[in-house]
Image (cartoon, rainbow, N blue to C red):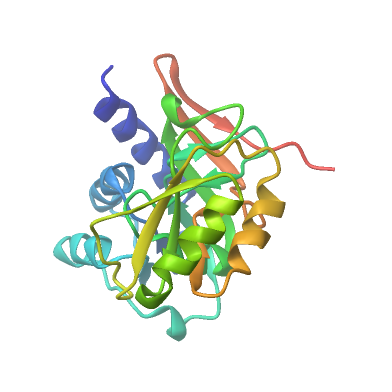
Length: 221
């Protein structure tokens, strides 16, 4: 199978986690696009969705789903989203599509976070994929200098987020303590959020492989 076929398989499997009659959280990215298509084909009745991006909102609405503002809900039963990388502890790097802040907000609202990914996204240590950091425009310089002091090499992405902010992609990191680094970067003045999902990682990983989609859960305790 090629990568798109693996993504499609993961997206289709995630439909089984959707709770009929419950508000659904939907993330952003190519794997999520396959999930949205599979959800529409399933006929499962979802009263409303909350979406992490303009892109996903447009896709959902085109297929007839109602999308509401996160401020209108007190919680989300299930949140389905992809990852750029995920480690053995189910900590993730996200933000390759630029929606990291809204994705993190939805993850915080979710009772269950289902990550859908192809096998290439699972890594022993995070960091070979550049770490996205969303910053307000006037802070690009000062945040870049601070990130360099942490050992990273930040590069300004030619992109503006749905929040009107900029993204620094930080290469050169080997993230052995993602919880600590997430807290450290989030404390830098001017940072909106960092694309490390460690304090709130995934509850379930649906990993698409050549042998099929594996349902994995992190070891707890």
